Length: 198
Length: 198
Image (tube, rainbow over all chains, first blue to last red; front, side, top):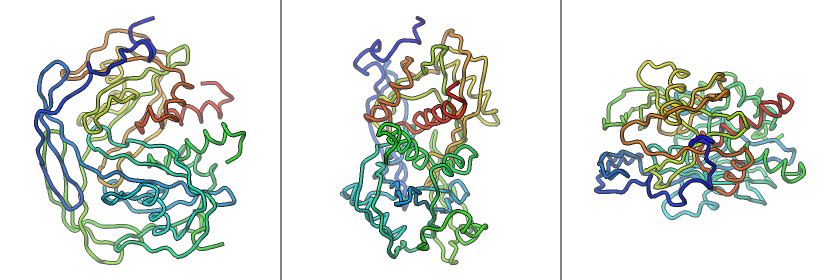
């Protein structure tokens, strides 16, 4: 066994030999939406370096499954990547907001749907190199349609697709959004583990 | 069928009713690693707003599969999320660098491995709200071990885990890194589609 082929249990239990610790922390930029920090940190070997990163309040995303098994999706223009993206509904947490309540609020605002059943699928970290952001993903079933109520300046299409269409769109590069792909990963795993029942 | 339950083919083919266009673009912050832009944009209804986002050169990630089927992984401290994360190897593109060559360079530097076979698994966009970043994920097989050569100030453990261990660690929240979860999604799909052969 080469050194690289150790298993998890062969690693030191502590991660102390990897940890970086904060020496000083400064606000580098405060925009309308983004807040950037610049910290001086001490590396495991005692040397110093900088870490620049964004402060993010965290977010939620919702995998809404219609009674016929199709997934409710959005098409929304994302300026940073200059594309209209196919995504599951999502939104940022407001200060002190409970993630599940935020998920229920965003699903209603963006799609007009309410759900009778909610299930936590998992937390993801999309930007570990330079943002504190996490996204908590929930599955919503027992959906009832109503009127959506978009925020001012929010423009998006709502539509539904089968799970097989979504696998195909991930394979052909039409879906590249990480929260959307990972929600389908979870759906697949739960489907296999629960004897092919949602 | 409610309006929300349209399928993809029911949507307007053009995304013109969603698009935002740039009115002016300014550098808002130039750090050592991060570059932040602040643009004034025109919304689909003609109103104006700001978009703040980071300029990122793009990145690659590698899913390295050992001959025994296990995956080569890293444990690395990520300051922004204050955790030692379990991840597949990855790195940022240098200016003008070919993504596959970058993947080969990063695999060697971080793990000491070279691979005889490379396959593109897909592109992901991890941060569509505020960064131009994309990550191109490659699968590497036919691995041979050698000496790793970490960048100055880079500290990471290399180890191997089975695919079942990785599914378990995603389920229990030990793996939350998006590129790592999505590489396992692709592996699963290819496994099922190719009659259970890698």
